[in-house]
Length: 81
Image 1 (tube, helix red, strand yellow):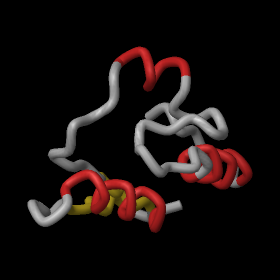
Image 2 (cartoon, rainbow, N blue to C red):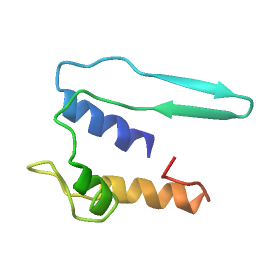
Image 3 (cartoon, rainbow, N blue to C red):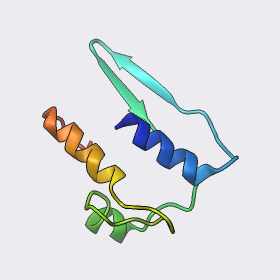
């Protein structure tokens, strides 16, 4: 799941990468991934982001975020945070 998030961010920024970070609290680690790419519309995020075969990329398959959500939920975590 982390690999998918990082690859998506790398695709979006191209050669203009900026470094992110993480935060540890007790036994938990919070990972924040962001990029300065063109972004996604509010409508796409609301209606399509975690649905399979929906992508904003010209050659995207639209399965990465769907797979990531499935993995997170299989471990009983929430992707809406």
